Length: 166
Image (cartoon, rainbow, N blue to C red; front, side):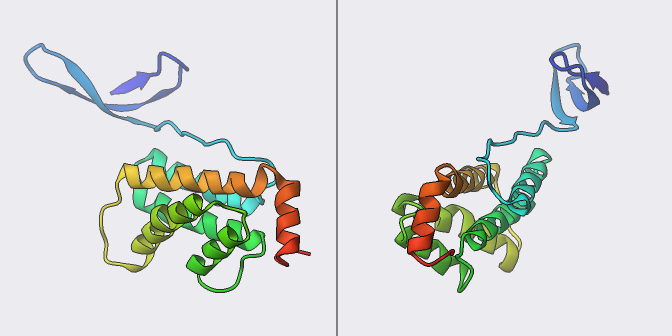
């Protein structure tokens, strides 16, 4: 069924089900899907933003696995852009926490909700990734980017002191 959104006027293709007895109809899906974009601080490198936005695009069509892999990649690129470029991703997350750029709680979320999930997608046997798993990774990766870029002058001072950047 072709439909038009009452709010914005955009048209799209919807899958609508009827019970066949004159009862209620319900919409199962609508294409193109809406695209929820998290606000990101200024100053994040374009490649990191592009990776993160592509993850959101994947999520807009329910591609939770693909979005989760891209979120992991965006985290890795964020760390690399800030001087955490040697060793495993796990070690780089720990170093960022050790330097005080991210909190211990954020460190744990980076491991549990982003790195491990991304590793499952990239390296392990296929499994379903749920919307909640993607949502958690998306949320905490946004928070980590805020840690690095919201108070950029302070973070750069920490990174210089830790000899991550010159």
